[in-house]
Length: 197
Image 1 (cartoon, rainbow, N blue to C red):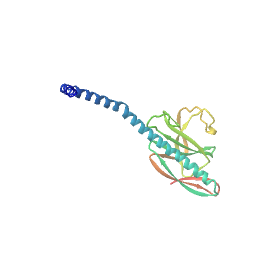
Image 2: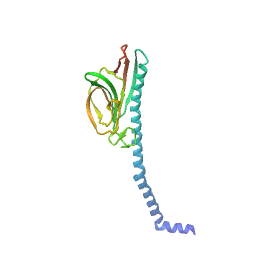
Image 3: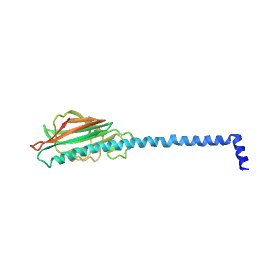
Image 4: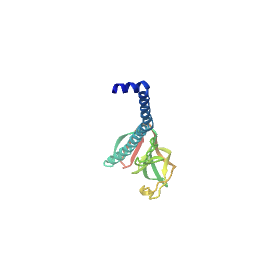
């Protein structure tokens, strides 16, 4: 009896039509839901990886400076990886021709537009990290992003970040994708100098 029913459905083509409709619904679900999520996930992974590299660069430079400060003089090499769609800066801030402090900055354009990534918003990622006064020996005049903030700029506290603008500074600028080696040297005078190889 069941075999006769199957033959009856098959002879009318109803089973084939139902199968094609179910297959069509599955393909539409894959196209509409799964593929965009896959693309978003890939972009988010690229963003997190790129920001991890940039943060690692900042930490490597800070650690090299801290290590050199324990010695009277010395030299360390720091290998940096600057990912695609990112900029990495080492700058010195001068007041009345006196080098007051230095900053390590990076900016990155998000691929996923995921505003849940730490340090990022819809405009991308921007981080500024103050470090000890550095002599950027072979630096040049560069244009760097600057974030207008409500807060204490001397303590680098940014309460309400607003728009990014550009400022002229002295230092190094690296645009990714790039692998770079920096020489960080502590002179016998106690001054720390960074050389771009």
